[in-house]
Image (cartoon, rainbow, N blue to C red; front, top):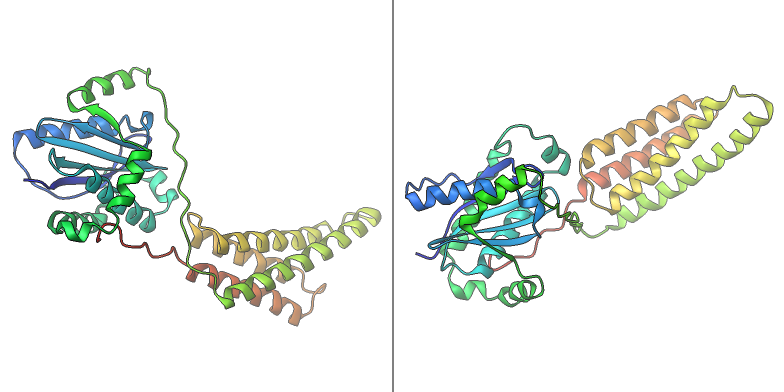
Length: 304
């Protein structure tokens, strides 16, 4: 039967399983293939991003990118193109759900077990969809595989290669972390960028002038100089967070916002209440825009 039997997401650097489909197949060949998949997951760092380990009745396909790799056990007659289309869908869904910090800090197996629901949903779709539903991006995936063909392995060799890697003789393949597309910039977002740049420029100019005066006269005003330069840097990073995807965006956004607030409160006396309110208001608007601008919805791949 042509189908996907099992899928999982692992961490590339050490093979730690992060999430997996809850499939119960007691066929001996399948159980043996699961053992081979586990051995292969611990040595993925030495391979290119795409690969296939072929067996007699079952194949293991893997697709790695950045910190994670998606792996699947499929019947040997299941289309390789569809297998990698399935893995790309899983990879995007996982990357959109969890940031690199959470992945790096995971210390126990299956730390993201709740992602199993997504795996099951996508797997079920690929197992049930007809060929006509898959034609939309078939040529696109096929062209990608021709340009970057998956490395071919023998399923029987995975345990042996795992032992060699543990002995310290394997090369390491470094994969570039993918760039994620964000939603379109809104008019309100453009306004927040302009106001942020203006606030940053005001902080920089005041900070430079105060620094010149402080260094010429005395060093008592160094705290005020720092209180001007920190909001300037915060404005720059707020612009960056709005324009580009970054892991732990929420945490970084709150840290930057509170930095702007604290520095402006510290500057009370050099700035009046209206000026402080303006700078904090712009920081609030920028923070809101950062938190509401999400990853772009992925265009359907292969009917999913």
